[in-house]
Amino acid sequence: MTLAIRELERRGALGREDVDAFLAAHAFPLVEGSSATFVWRGEAESVHLQHWVFGLPSAQPFTRLGETDLWYFIQELPPRSRVEYKLEIVPRGETRSRLVLDPLNPHLANDPFGANSVCHGATYQRPEWTLPDDEARRGALETLEVASEGLGRTVPVDVYLPARFRTRRRYPLLVAHDGGDYLRYSSLRTVLDNLIHRLEIPPMVVALTTSSDRLVEYADHPGHARFLAEELLPALEARYPLRREPAQRGLMGASFGGVASLAAASRYPGRFGRLLLQSGSFAFADIGAGRRGPVFDPVVRFVNRFREEPQRVAERVFVSCGIYESLIYENRSMVPILQRTGMEVRYVEAWDGHNWENWRDRLREGLSWLFPGPLWMVYE
Image (cartoon, rainbow, N blue to C red; front, side):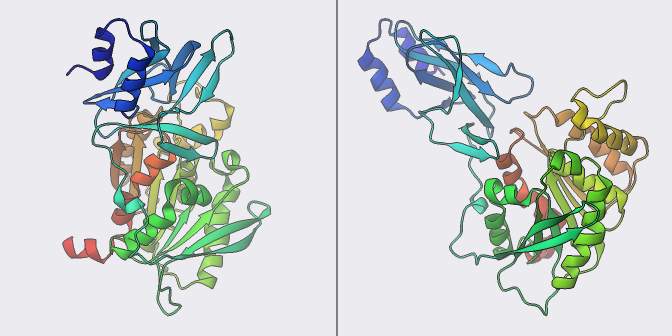
């Protein structure tokens, strides 16, 4: 296959009209087979692609197309991939660069730090169960405040209640770290509504926690574990009709939230029977000091300890990670250690990075395996 940018290049001397026609004829990034062509148009000293694909240089230089003002860069991109990126531009006559969204790409992904442009590899499609379904009844959200001695503060907690919530029924409970971010950036409320409507998970109560100091509280903090197990859980059980079996209780989180989930379960083994760990920041150091900086020191101590003496802390553990993440090695290495304890473990990798849409796309598989609804119970 000859890429469209190569065909344009072979035409030799190009005018403004040629570039206009090329841009009008295609959507960008232009994905052709396993190649993605990124372009930027304008006068510049240099243009780079800034991405977060582990293993590649984080800044990839664009090439200027002849004497035109069109710049391009070609990246190999496996099918089903998602890559978030920005363009780094040094304008003509300047020395300082600026990061911008790709003006030719309408696809954006948001996170707590802003937005990134997104390139979808061939055959990637956003899962339809992450989009609003008019036939799925919406659950409700309400907010509680839970006084915590463990954390020394009052903690606001949003609680998702499924559609048709009834006080005479009993519901499974899932506690989600960074719950507000899961709602905003991973469409968690829509996902829950849809999966419950489709009977893929049972109607369930989901407590959505937030932390004002997550890098401390999520890093194997005893007060945080105490908050979850001894303060939040009793408060929720007093207010809502919840099932009390460990198999009907779960913890979930991404990145440091994954560490917080496993660390809390380790301090209270058997209290939460289901764990959903997404791209956990499971830093460890078999030899020497950790390489990720002092904020990871308590994480390294916890993970080192867990690796040395693995313990059965739950019944089922779902682990997922993106192949393009720097944490892929750490997550892969945790799987056999978790399995060695006798816990049932499912591990999933995706052609994606450390971001909320990667975590969103894995929710169906994780939730329906940890909490199978009537649909899966029939087929299993």
